[in-house]
Every structure is written in structure tokens, then in C-alpha cells.
Image (cartoon, rainbow, N blue to C red):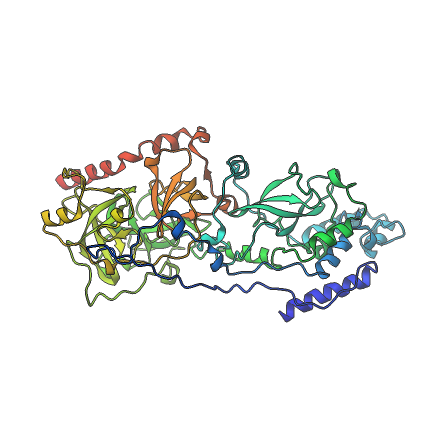
Length: 607
């Protein structure tokens, strides 16, 4: 804080010396971001049914579990001090000028010579000598002072128009702890001011103006220039994490001019007084916001790192794959000894460090590759998502126990399932009743704390349709009858994960979500239902049969604007994606994927 205060005081002293028209600076202590998580303990709800099966699993409405994540807000957006930031940008409010020697844009009052034609003494002297070489070198020097690396935006869908035309709400960034800025987004909200490029001008050089956030949806904000009041004609959407967005005061510290939009330049005779009144006490971005974005855009996984990942053709086993590409934390993995690839997030429960399968007793497809290629290395174990430690010494899952589980081959369904094998470190091999291969080739691995498995009766008490075993005719399905008929027991409720974080999602919120049936695709999506920590994700423009049940902390969910920020391709709603008929054709056949895999397993068994 002392360093920050010294910086502000130095800037203020600079403006006192070079700009005598500025107001006197008063002492203050700027509010800074704490970047500390303050979590409010959530009172655990209890509900006891007549059989005692659902203790701790209360029936959940959309409103009761999707409380705001404001309690988890980790940063506080700093307010603009009453004098410092105003003093800084008031200096820039003077008419802009362009140096006739080097082309630099600045404030006319700060320029040199009687006619204010040059930004420095050296430019004035160089121009006087009429040296063409000096002019060229000066321009090169200015160009090289502050190199800026711009992310290439991938725009195939206009989120702003989509949200405004339908009056939609985007899930806040703070709901997604795994995305850039997810843990340090703070309380950015409507009313926060920023400095942005002024597009409403006839000037040939870049000039800036102050804008306020009118509406926030994920990373994207609807901005309105100061002075337009209720006039929406110049409103525009922008991703807050792109380099063109700056906190108030940036123009002054960077020598950039603040120029009112031409549409309203005659609206006020005294713009300084107007801004003093409007911006005193207002909030702006933290001064290190851009640095935090850059830091958060660095990802530890690198190309040619080796990992163990689920074999998408045989879910019961893993195999070695190489990282081929990293985009926004998402990994494109290429299976060793194959050109086939698989997309997942670096925090996905489907990838593990080399040696993980052997350590817990999981099936593993060995490779014939005996020597690593130059540049290959095993990804360090600390890069992978950690699972909660569990005590398997007491009452624990046993082979044959029944439960309910999200079907990994049909994520719209929660099915009757069975524990087929208990592995080490709390991992379980599970099969969907009525559709498993005789050799267990379609078993899949979930951790005992996974939010994708539930105690018998979970669907019933939460009004979710439970998919019965294929071929089971005694409908409606009743767990007690089924347990008696199969001579089975249900896994004890106390063994399941009952933690429900204060996730902040609301029914109807928009987001960008991975289509887990084709995980290379990230699509425009909507939260249509919330049950405890479980979200029902609907892909806009598609039928409900393509919906998927996803955990609220899934690394396959992203805020609005994530694709643009990271450079990933966003798939628009179906009605707008006719330009890619191959994707449409593939998605229309997703519902038959499970039966196709089962038939393949049966064929493999016969061979």
C-alpha cells in the first residue's frame, strides 16, 4: 500500500509542476484489492424422509440453492479518489496535439515551442535541423517504447446483440473459479468507470473518453460514454479483459488525450466541472487489472507433455496422450501411437499424471513406444486437479452396491447404476444397469466424492427423471422393489458428497459450455435448472434431449466472452450455425452414440 501511495503522490507532484491549472491534491489512502477469499459458511440443510435414505439431501428449488456469489467476492473495486484521478484526467482534458516530428499524440498544454507543435525539446531541435533521418529514428523510437501484444479475438457470434435483444442475463465471472480472473474478479458491477477508445470522433489519431458499465454479462460489458445520460445510441459491448480497457487515470499516466465524443461535445461548456461531479467517488478498475489478466492467461501445461487420459473408445481404461495444443486452459491431447485426439480442460477429472492408473489399480492400455521423442516430458503431478482424501478403512463402498449416476455416454440422463470395482484412493468403477458389456469394457471411473454420483432415491426426492435399466418393464421404477428383485443393497447415503458451494448460478443465466458428447465444441448455452450443486445445461437452439447435467464447479463451463478472450471458437445457437452443416449433422446423431458404443463393445467381445 505504501508503494501505491508513493506512486500516486509522485504522479500528483508531477502534475502540480507541469500543469499549474490543476487542483491541489489532498492526502488519501487508495482502496486496494485484497485478493483474499472470504467465504461465508453455508448452513447445512437437513431433511429426513420416512426411510432415512435422504438425510442431508433436501428437495431443492432453483431459487433455494443458487444464492448470489457476492459473499465469495474476493476483490473490491477501488473507488476513484476525490482529487487524484480527477486531477490526472483533467490534465488530459485539454485539446489534443500531435507532434509534428515523431507523431506522438499528447496534451497541447504540455507540448513545447510557442505554437505547441512538438512533444519534447529533442523533437523541436530535430525538426529544426530538417533531418529526415532524425524523423525516421524518432518515429521508430516511439513505436518501440511500449510494445503491446493483442490477443486475436474469435468473433463468430454477437453476444451483445443476443443478450440485449432477448433481455438475457449472463452468469458472473465469479461463478467460474477455473477461468482467468475467476478468483480475483472482485465486485465489478454496473456503474464502474473505465477509459476506452473514443470511436465518436473525426480525429485521425487515437483519443479516449470515459465510459460506464451499463450491463455486465460474464467478461463482456455494455458501455456508455459519460455525458450520454439515458441516450443509448452510442452504447457498445466490449470484453473487459482486452488491452483496450483501462482504469480511470490511465490516460493521464500514459500521456493520452481525453476528448469528448463529437455527438455531445457541445452539450456542456465546462467538461471538467461535469466530470468532477460525475466521477467523484465512482469506482474504476484496479490499477493492476491488466497485469492480473496477463498473469491469469498463463497456463502450466505445455506442448509435448505426457499425461494419462481416459480412452474415449474404451471408457474402462486410460492410455498415454501428448499435449498438442493449449487454449485458455483447454488441452488438445493426441493419443500416443495414434492420430486421434481428445479435448478436455487441464482440471478435468479425466486426465492424470503418468503412473496414476497403476497406483490405484485402474485398467491401462500399454504403449509400444519405448523411448520418448525429443522434447517430451511427463507432466508434473502437481499440475493435475486434486481429489479429496477419503477413509476407506471403515464403512465403505462395496462391489455390487446400487446408486444413481450421470451416464457419461448420455449426459442428459441420470441412471440406475452399480459399483463394479473399488479402486484405491477413493476411486470406483461404475456400470449403468441393463446396458453393460460382459467384459466390463464400458465401466467408467468416478471418485467417491464425485458430484456425478448420487444415493439411491436422489432423483425421486428432487423430481428428476431417473432412467431405469434398459429392458426393465416394471414401471414406474421403484428402488425398493428393484433392490429386492436383484438381491442388492443401496450404497449408504453418508458416503456421498453433500457439499453444496455458494456457486451463484441462477436459472436462465447464459454461459459458454462444452458439449461433452463432442468436447472440442464450446457452445452458447443456458442454465435451465439447478438442483443443489447440479446444473442442467441447455444448448441454445437445440432440443432438450441434448441437455446435459453438469456440476456447478465443472471446468467445462465458461462465462460469456471466454471464447473471445482466449481465442477459442464459439459455436452459435443451432439456428445461426447453418454455416457448419457437418457439426449440425454430427449433433443430430449424438442420441445414438451410446447404443453405437455398446454394439462396438459386444462385437469386440465376440471377436
